[in-house]
Image (cartoon, rainbow, N blue to C red; front, side, top):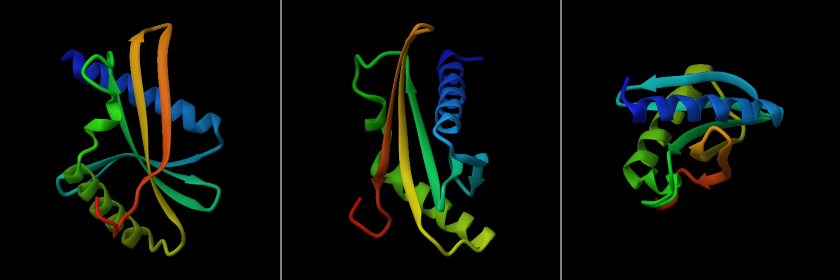
Length: 123
């Protein structure tokens, strides 16, 4: 398995552990819709949260969250809309980014950006 895939899987596992510790209820992981994938779908109390996880081995070339481009945001919003229709969700939603830098097994930085972007606003 390629190193970037291993790093991504490690990051997603750390993100799941992180949000479980915060009391989120995990509904789906790696949920696919057309060309998009939502890494984690969870409930934060009464809020449906779509979470994009970005992991890097270092931040030498920039923080992981900068990899969530306009195009990626649009794909996430489309997938979120499809998921809401599938489960007939009609209450509050949120799009978060969890950015992880895995410098080593003992040097991990996790940043959680709640309400990282909003559907309907210029992204």
